[in-house]
Image (cartoon, rainbow, N blue to C red; front, side):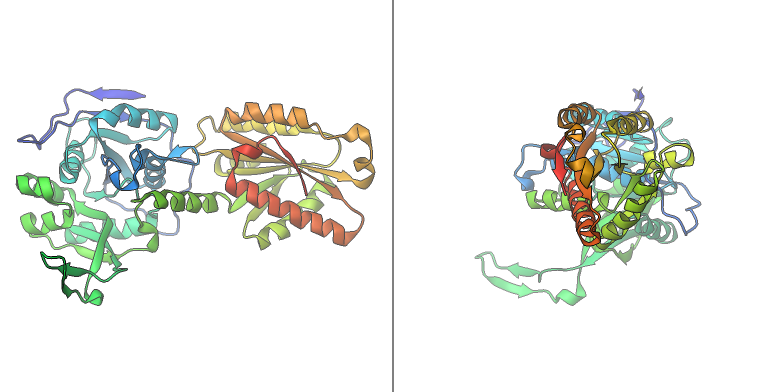
Length: 442
């Protein structure tokens, strides 16, 4: 749903300070589970995600925050990382004016919720200012945030535990920020291009995101800062110190805070996402004894490949929760073609998950006995599988097939199971469109 806010005014107005018309878009909550084991934050927290960059350093025509990873824009993953945190109330995404429509489409397509989209300014500080002040606008936030977290839209791997540390430190000290050890030695050069001096690396840290502030501090810092700060500054913690006298608490962050900056970083981010998506699967046995025995052997083989496997008889009743929380499904067929079981699973996924956040995977595992393998009447229904896969692909579901023999020779049988597990792990990780609808032999 899209609700326009024509009364949104820009409190950063002045020379070169753009207006910030916003749209509030609401959707279904993300499927992921929030972190558990720690008490929830008991004060209101909101997030500002500056996403107005042009991505010049990537060398691509598309700004990096809108580049697609596994069929989904990078910024969508970052938004989801914050949506999964139950104690975050609102997420303000600040984009270039010409990207407002694109951002609205992303939010609607991937059913993001509690997101306010605001147009940015010509510089980073102008954009963040627009995002912070949008939280003041009547009607956009029923409860003004006690803490505002600022985070780059192109850092998608931030975790709840670290956000909690930043939020608490910001409430206690007025400001808090992530830091990381310097990777390279920093040097100063002369105007002629020669070495002037180097810094002692152990004494310095790289300033990273996220950063947190009490709402009062960050709002006041932007109201007091100069045009030179808006034009040339990049460090929010410095504004809080210079204009509010608030010295930030610095917290060393995890390695996962890295930022997608260059083209190679997009490939690295996709690799991380693929690994994350391939960590688990559920195997549907249909309640058959032979399929359950296969699942037990397959579970061991998958575990050796660092993939968790949950064998279940079906996806009905309490097992229907897998349709929402799992991304990978293995449908076992012991006798006959049984593509009807795959068809039923596809239908269940479409009904339960109409806006998949990334492509889901179904692997049809067709197990034949040695007698069935020699019987022409049990030939693989390759054309039917391909047709079904083509239709499923339209709904963000990638369907693959694996066929292997249930040999009476235990060693041969184990090799087949291991091989099938390896193929399964690869298909799930790579999610290759080129292999959709293919029946592979294990």
